[in-house]
Image (cartoon, rainbow, N blue to C red; front, side, top):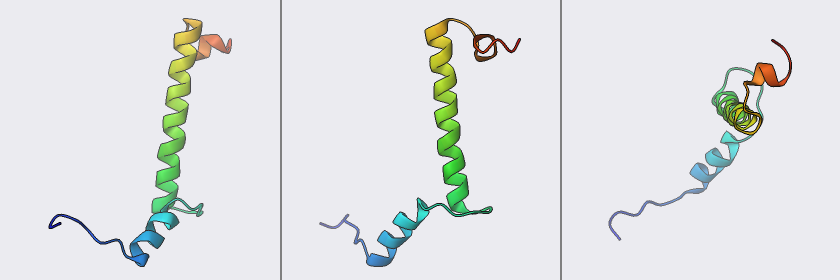
Length: 62
């Protein structure tokens, strides 16, 4: 196979380290920030779809 790539132990270690929890402004914190933002966005959409009103109205904030 001419198009295959080799997976070395260092690249596997870097991939598993990317998902670790590290404090500060690092690549890991940006990954976790994006994941949590996606969960929040999808949950807000689900609240609007199920209840038929916005998130702020659903929680009686306005």
